[in-house]
Image 1: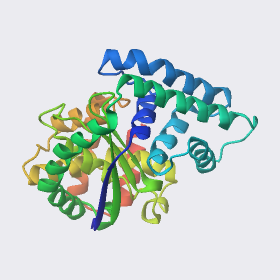
Image 2 (image 1 turned 180 degrees about the vertical axis):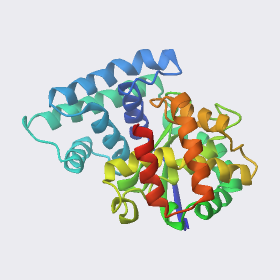
Image 3 (image 1 turned 135 degrees about the vertical axis):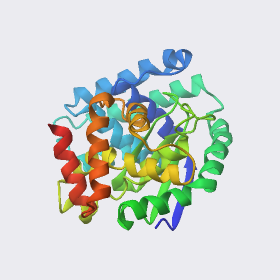
Image 4 (image 1 turned 90 degrees about the vertical axis):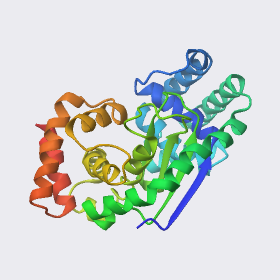
Length: 293
């Protein structure tokens, strides 16, 4: 069970999260913010592409690491190492670090009091989590396996770009979550999204990677953990657990997935799991194969 949960905010992570969202096609909720930030985000993406590196993957890795590294040069080097990227141009890391600095400068122009704003934004989601989160995680562990819940994790809250989004970084035992002041979907409180993100953090451990490669495990867990998270949320009276809510969660949390196609398959799989429970990693692997059909 979760024994240690650290909360923090990060301006640098906010900037890179915004760039990562834009690179994956997620639109900004604030047109004024986008008009200032997006050109710098595009310039950063272009520098990554010019180096011959995958843009979404690199931005995802940079976002996950940004809260622990203040130096942009070191941040870029760490991301390159984590992703095992080839170094065809030795000047590329310097240019990318400079593009990150430009992105941070653009954010400073757009939101000069961002650090103070983030300090205010942490309270609503933290209070919501502390009221229901522990119960959510206990129920998730009961419905799946205890290893589905990490023993320690860090939550990095960022300013909203999309108006409700987040990502899990299993290799860092960290989640990044937009600190919205109100639930974008009343039927899916952000504490439920947070439980879903936390439940993905053990995807890189042997209990999952012995069954499927790490990248597949991370992708499969994104889908597999939605039903147990909704069932846990229903148990603590935060949300309903039915196929309609499942489809809404997929659409809100995984916008790149066709919810209308995935929801019936996942709902059928979930009910089969409840009726004939096997080991959770085996069930997740079966879902991964099912959703590929």
